[in-house]
Image 1 (cartoon, rainbow, N blue to C red):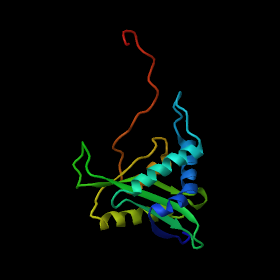
Image 2 (image 1 turned 90 degrees about the vertical axis):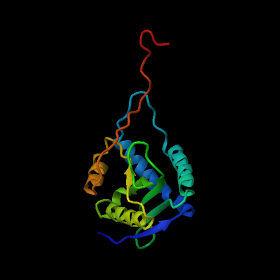
Image 3 (image 1 turned 180 degrees about the horizontal axis):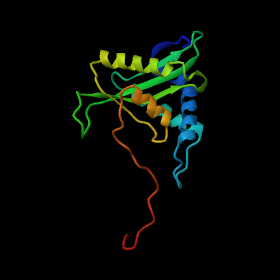
Image 4 (image 1 turned 45 degrees about the vertical axis):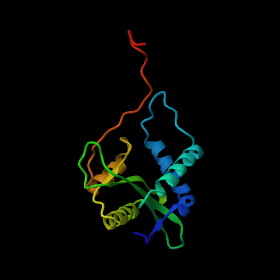
Length: 172
């Protein structure tokens, strides 16, 4: 593993996340199930929308981003976590974290950076007294699913998305 340092990042570092998000976006497009009739946003529009979400999430109490930086300061990965107070189905230990993004640049993968970011996420959550974490993964992203399962997470919810089917006889 090549040495990286994991640094805490607030809203002032959102701009540093742009190339990392765009890399993640490209990866998502490569594993996306490509739902017929559903168009994908372009990279710039996707970043603009995600950036606005990051601004909103990082304004929440205790939300945080962690950036993995190489020695020369180049960001090669990041994780962003915010919180939910409760779940309407599961009994949680109070509020729980939601990992909104975890990304490592393609050329930096396989070096343990994702694992190091997750370890830092766990430390931050424990320091805040939070014991549970929710993670969303594209169902077709086999590599991410295997990674999170190695970390001890298990699938809980599958969401379905698509255009409405044609109206059936008798529907108005």
